[in-house]
Amino acid sequence: MKIAFVVPGFGPSFGSGISLGGLETLSQLSKITSLSIFTPARSEPQYSELLKLAKFYGINIQKVNVKHLLPFFSKNFFRGYPSPASLISLTDLSFLNSMEVIISVEPFSPLSYQLLKHARKKGIKHVVLSWENLTSNPLLNIPPYKFYLDSCKKNSNFLWAATNTTAECFRKKGYETEKIKVSYFGTNTDLYKKEDKQSENNILQILYFGRLEQNKGIHEIVKAFEIVSKKKKNIHLTICGDGISRDWLEERIKQSNTPITYLGFIPENQKPKIFSKADVFISPSKNRRRFGIKVWEEQFGFTFIEAMASGLPVISTSSGSIPEVLGRNNFLIEEVSVEEISKILEKITLIPKHELVDLGRKNQDRAKNYFDSKKNSRKILEMLRQ
Image (cartoon, rainbow, N blue to C red; front, side, top):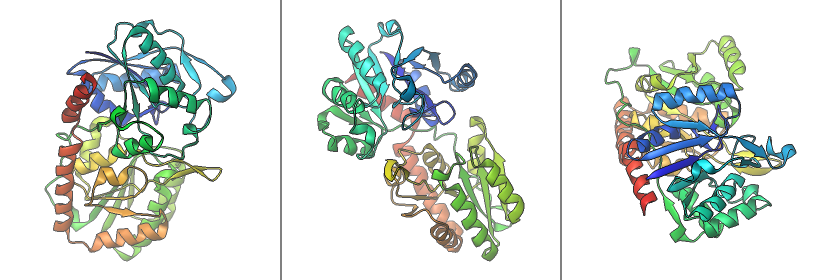
């Protein structure tokens, strides 16, 4: 089966449309079928960086050219450029003529609408992948996005929902249940393992791995940890990642004299080693609002499944799809605040180490059962063949 995956961008470094964590599953899918990924990278330097990742994962990524439908809006509207919300279209579709399946991202995307029309004209199957889980997202209700959504709802072969939360979102927006199929992405669970040795001096090692942005709760994590570490001496926080809060973080660590280690950006091939040294993973995602309207909730969170595959209990929130991904054996808070995170960190320090290990093993089993990229790539291929 020849599959074309047309992706507006890869977040966070290369626009958005699909998280970089999704490359692992697409890599596994490319090993069992013919898969080509096409994307309008934001710039040539970023495309070069994307090609390095493609080489690492062993997948075929090609650059395509786009034009702006409305230049004023298209570069920065709701979610920026490139993204499913960008008002752009491909300048040439001939590379798709030999494909059997075209996959686009989000049914409210102008690219999805353009690809849908081309697929119907050529007799090619069209599938729309979605991560959306917020029925109040303005893009689902205003033109021209509602027009694109309604067209895909009526004429695409089916919607590939990345989570059950996404599936429920689109049922509420009028999608027929039989036109929605759920299939998870995943990670290579064989790469992630928990170190058996006890932490040095019995220190509880807490890890944050992700973007350094306010909607990931990084400010609240650091401030809460400063409070708890003054009471509890057997606790250490390691932070990995990059983002707009990096300068704030580095300055805060210098001034606070708190047991926090910041390791900066970590390459993909070093992630399993970082996770293996931790005892607990923390990532309290926050809902995002604009002009008082909720425009985003956590849609999946690949670091959650990497943490679970590493045998770590997870501290997070009930934002979006997080409860579905994490299941019942973790620590979720409703409100991301310094006070709430302080409480959960103190609670964690009182739990015997062997109980945390048991929780981590349950997470490991869950990751292997639900979020293994090899298993899930086969499920995705079967879904596309039906």
